[in-house]
Image 1: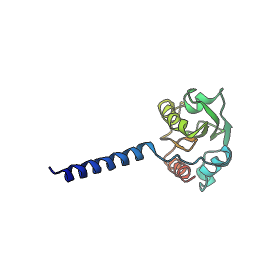
Image 2: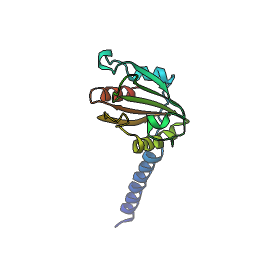
Image 3: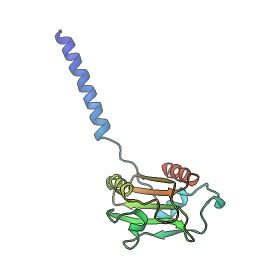
Image 4: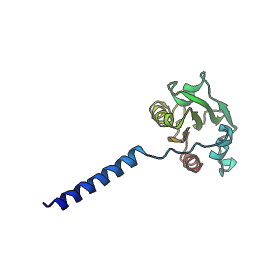
Length: 159
């Protein structure tokens, strides 16, 4: 092989290596979602007709006393959290918004929650759809039915 071919191969390999490093390590940090958790929760439920929602849906502050019941774990170090659930009966529906201290902690929290959450926490009913994802410093846990869950997830993705 000529020196020109060798240098061309080296240049191509270097460019590919730099591109791979840039994609892996320079991933843009996702912008945080602005607003209170209650305001964000309203946006997550936007566009869903009231008759399609569980009865007497209410927001419940998540604290050290009830965090395990909502997230399945106490191992998430969060700044604030709120859950949206039916205030009557055993209805398999729960949406939990968790604001982490920063976006870097959100990805780890997603994995911890995925490994801990119990879609049968209501004992006699089970959520058919479970999704845990993050956007900036915000984590959402959606446990609901096949009708509501996709809309809630899409609304979160569009925040």
